[in-house]
Amino acid sequence: MKIAIEESWEKALHEEFDKAYFINLISFVEEEYSKFHILPQKEDLFNAFNHCPFENVKVVILGQDPYPTPGQACGLAFSVPSITPQPPSLRNIFKELEKDLNKTAPVSGCLDKWANQGVFLLNSILTVRSGHPQSHRKKGWETFTDATIKKLSEQREHLVFMLWGKYAQSKAKLIDKHTHLILTASHPSPRSAHRSFFGCRHFSQTNEYLKSHHLAEIDW
Image 1 (cartoon, rainbow, N blue to C red):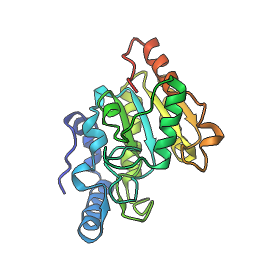
Image 2 (cartoon, rainbow, N blue to C red):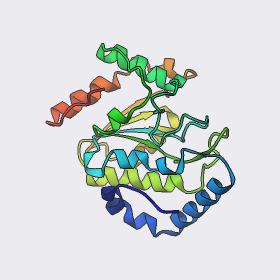
Image 3 (cartoon, rainbow, N blue to C red):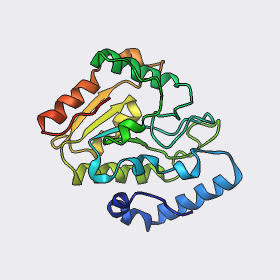
């Protein structure tokens, strides 16, 4: 399977592509695509990277794995195609956005607008079998995306990392907290959003941080 990833990311992560774990991972994923309904579509696999070049990243929002429901996964964490109804977690993200910034929530669940401004919407696991959440867990994607987070932490400055839920927060150890801003809250899922996601004000905090470092704010 050809790795169709944006040029700056190919340069930043080229060492990973030659490692045994990644070669085995791609072989596994290719076989899965040939046998099962795998999400997202193969051409959308590296969408998060292709929408947001390495040097353009300002904000990292970390998800776990793609939506397992057909028609939802598009290669960007939490995002869905514009014609697709918003999943519950995304609706809660928009509720918090609306309250935090006192603006009308987007009608579309497509987050391309965020990604194109430097919001890196990264799932820790990039593929999943349709209808089977976390079915591609511990196959190698976590090693690859951990390397991605480390590379951003080491080679960039003044990034904002939004870590929602315990799984995302476990990645904080990969990030230099003295160089970057780490924001944590409960996951926006209906099961946990009430704990600390609602009221977290991560969107306004992000823009305040970017502004304080003379960086353009995100038009959420």
